[in-house]
Image 1 (tube, chains in turn brown, yellow, green):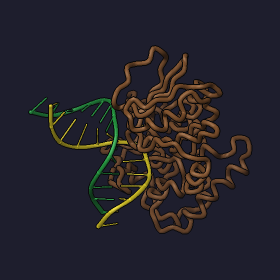
Image 2: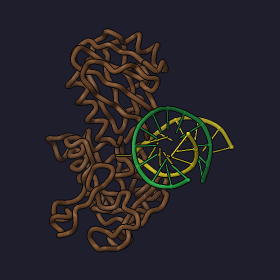
Image 3: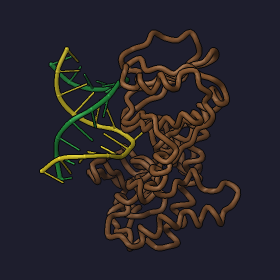
Image 4: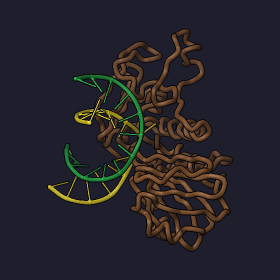
Length: 277
DNA sequence: GCGGAATGTAGAT
DNA sequence: TCTACCTTCCGCT
């Protein structure tokens, strides 16, 4: 379930379990064996996240760069270690905990300059916005606005472009556009500055909650099934949402059938009545 | 057991 | 715009 909130949560979870301690590093599957050997026994000194990229710091030995892609999963557990299997790309363990990484798009040992190059090509990440300084957080979001406001590309595609804004995935894009009544096919340049400001601020709030709860919830309290007097709803991806994967179901607010269509190789979902040009 | 889909991205065309 | 890559899970036979 990897959107940005998952990755930031993982960075924190790694520090909680392994931060400042020497760890055993291995690659049961074999594809990361050489690098794992270089890291085995070293101290995990830090963890960082930018968008959907996770970095585990091993001091002078460099950083483990992890990108989960669509399928990657991290599993934390406590000893005893399960038998190594041929799908575990990376295993990190100490006496109290272990982490198994499966199916990542990327798992590579990189240098500090290589890490910096990744930061440089990513747009602003709502979860890296200053937590205690609203003005700084807003200014950070303006970096995305500079590109969006000049683009003829649809807002839905821009939100998925990690160079424009980092960490938003298919769920957050669909949901934030619904929450602001924005037609996903509107061009970036036709978005108002005030609209962008509201979207950016909303993403900061939604994604912080996502990190806390380790799931994506976007339905406002006044629109929950209980509040609306409707039967309880179960979303199979684990969070409460307005439109994501609700194709052909009635919109929670107006009852119009939720539509779906491919956009930028992913399935887009929206309410044609609540979301306008 | 098989086929398809899934919260993603890079690289080729 | 397409294809390749990585894994799991669900529904269908």
